[in-house]
Length: 258
Image 1 (tube, rainbow, N blue to C red):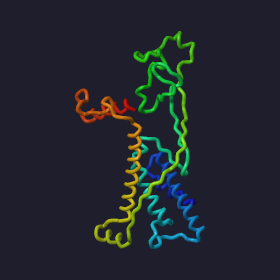
Image 2 (cartoon, rainbow, N blue to C red; image 1 turned 135 degrees about the vertical axis):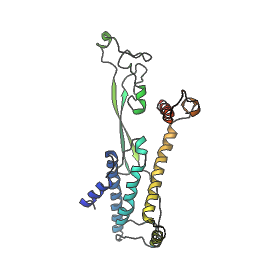
Image 3 (cartoon, one colour; image 1 turned 60 degrees about the horizontal axis):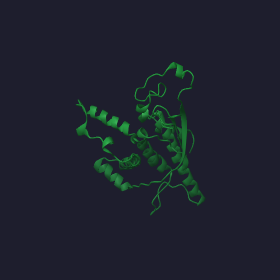
Image 4 (cartoon, rainbow, N blue to C red; image 1 turned 180 degrees about the vertical axis):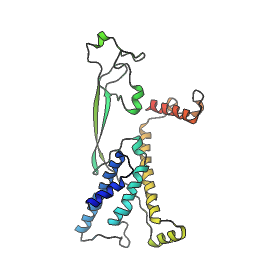
């Protein structure tokens, strides 16, 4: 199945996506193709042949139609709607096990209130970028340092760290079904495409579960709320002119807590 037609199908699936999500879509599509090919080899080894429908009483069916009409539409619907990739880094795996890699900028030595190994340039840490780190090393009054002092030294250092971690994919399953009779009745009585609506329903469920799992993980590692890091709209300082002013206060508190 990996031919020009398949490559064209992948490009169609990636239309309208930004380069980052398009790359993830290609990996997801290839993973789906490999999984379908694996099931097909298993069936052939057992003397079975490729079916376009399930046998009576079976709970699943793997065939060409499943890949084209169900799996790929679900993937295409899920990827653009989930906000997981907007709040955390996402690296698609090409196998059930793999490695994720991230690179970060850290302080190489301790000085001016900075601790060696502390992350410096992550988006939520830029506010703590120490202006005195390259100058007079006075955190309370950052400024340039004496020329005579700094000319003879290398200066404080930054360094890049590449962090690698092994991960293993976990499995989740959802299912839904419809009959030709139900599809025909829904179309004639309510002008509803039952197949498309079912795919949309499953796609929404997958996207919501994915986002909720990430949110639960973030909340678990966020620590215990305290009065200092809890937003209370009633005690916001100053006089907000619009809702956006209160959102700005909330964003500041989130950055400080992070």
